[in-house]
Length: 85
Picture 1 (cartoon, rainbow, N blue to C red):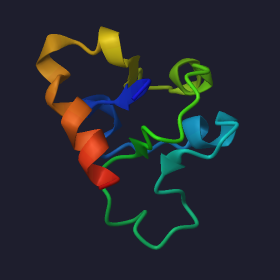
Picture 2 (tube, rainbow, N blue to C red; picture 1 turned 90 degrees about the vertical axis):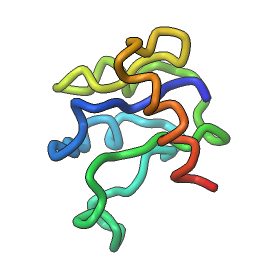
Picture 3 (tube, rainbow, N blue to C red; picture 1 turned 30 degrees about the vertical axis):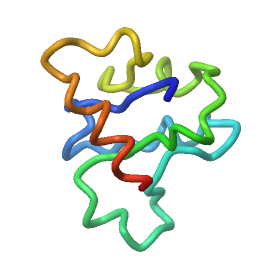
């Protein structure tokens, strides 16, 4: 997994990251049925190409490279991966 969406996304779900992702690996999108119920967005670790476009587009600084996830949000690494299992 190249990038991880962490706690600042909860309740925000700003889709600027979705708009800039060249491989559409961030879900749920506003057009998907689960968008309203989801508390945050997730990056598909198998589809992410590690481009970094999402990180700079996030207005709440919720996206981090895997090796830079702050210690207090390390649990989001598994949370993102579990979403796609």
